[in-house]
Length: 464
Image (cartoon, rainbow, N blue to C red; front, top):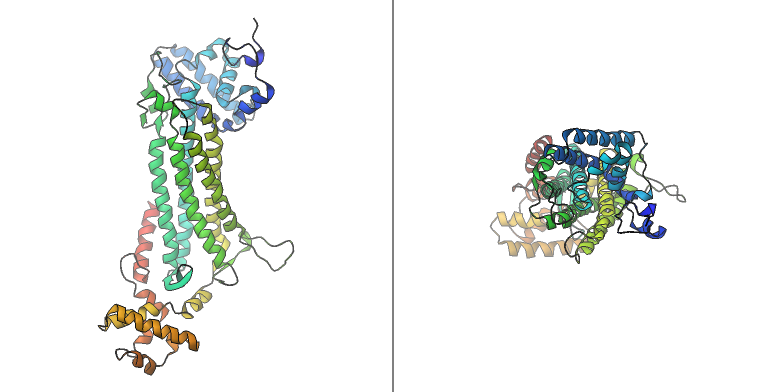
């Protein structure tokens, strides 16, 4: 019986083509065409290996490689546009190769399956994207570092529970986010090691009787190792989950910083002003300047978190080995990577040219609260008073000041000495905001000397 042309992708086991709606539902060409370059790279390495192993002749391998490079050239000039009938990028390439080379093109798939092929393509693609995200993280860190260096002696209120706690150096605050970004880079580098394992040659699930050399293709494609178990090779998507978890933490950190910028830019805080380069207005209220960049980053973080949960849910019930469910990993990864890169770029631009810190407003903020109360207690401790006794004394003093509407710095010396005879005139210097910050000399603290050491360390870290 003649085989329906729409079923020609498959063996003669099939007599009819797919229902048009199922064909649309089943196809992935609409999004996995993004893997075209990786599919060509993997196919070229596979063809070269087949030739060197004597599975096909060296001349045939050379022709296959030439044909694959022709497809690459066609794609570069916009002439390779497979339709829905191709189903996916792998069949699209193979079909075009057969059109170019005739029966020889049918030899390319010898010794491999789409199962190990797609796993290879996806790992090659994600490996490159991890490197791109690492570069975007570096740019973001350098933007933060530039602001920290510019404001290395500016103070900002430090908060716990979103309540004024103690003044800190603004640079110290910004450097905390660089530390987070450095952990993000470390996590991504660790994920990359597990991404960089080659499944090619595992075939559908059980390996192949064709005398191939898996290590040759892995080495040519830059993989560090090959999967030791063919079942695991075609069914492993741990690397995708790990990547999305690492990307989720990148977005957590960006979202936390975004929330702070949104608060800082409000009239109530007024710590930063937004430049026209990174802000929009209101269609109704002409006075408005909106922090769209950090608001969008804060919102987009949910997309990446959702992809993580989607991948976990997709994988959790799958038996070995390959299942069609795995088609769902690509759109999640593609969007997760794109969202992560877009958000990193936007936040880098925001700190490069989208906001201006207001040192005078910041200095006024740290001078108008009771965030130096701990330093009063520390002053007494230095004079030999037990900390808990000092703590209680200062708590009562703050309560009285709040009732009277005065700050600690406004109290006359007599009032201090009524509280405890250990107080002397040097109490005023000890509780000045700049001295409060400078006194935090413990390693990793916010003292100016410590911050300068941190700046120097991070300068060297990012330069290398």
